[in-house]
Length: 136
Image (cartoon, rainbow, N blue to C red):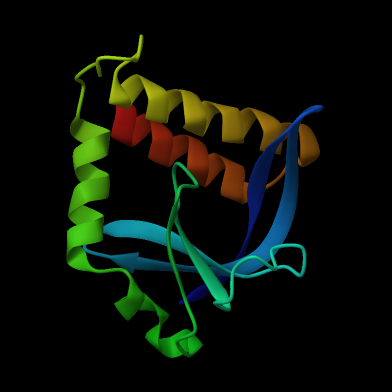
């Protein structure tokens, strides 16, 4: 587990909001995930830690495990399914863009919103590199 800072993006009625949070990163099956403590405004959930995919920011699961055991909350099946989404270039019946294009758009949206907040963050370069490697 590595300590880090990363950006969370929310879609609100008035537009997109990005803000920086402190958390952790870990790698499982060759893929990176972020872990952050739940904030008080997220009362509808009960678990303490939120685990998300690093590149897209999609929430994978949440858990009350101790910090050392958080990795076990993300199963290898979850990782495999996430990687399938990255590789899937098919277009769904109700979508105009492929899954891959949707994920690329989401990663670019996170990058764009985060860059406006802190253009000097090294995490942004890492996010950009990860998105480039996965989608190109």
